[in-house]
Image (cartoon, rainbow, N blue to C red):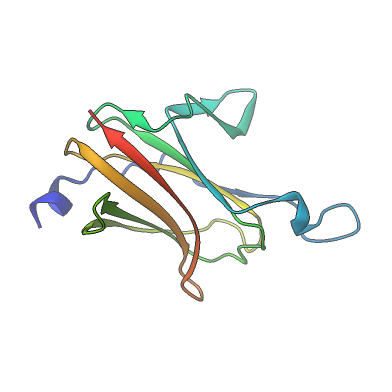
Length: 137
């Protein structure tokens, strides 16, 4: 409970994007992935800067969740586990501002140093999209 109490959830940016599937856009343009970074590219807000897997404790960690399939407006869940597989915390679900799209960008912060695994999940249908290991120093 202490970890959840001190969990600093910062949703400065929550973006879901891409056109609805039509003749010019298909889900084959997207592949399932979860990327972490330190910021957003000012000239392209769908691109993270400082992409990596090691961050300072309590810093804002941006994430970019990409789904091969349209997210369909599903809420987004980021589950954080210790790298040994034991649960650490689940960050409260992020509301998706659009009813369609393949990309979701937002941020979170954790208070404890350690090695973790972040998993991006679409709440509707409980569909796991991708995971990434990272370290807080």
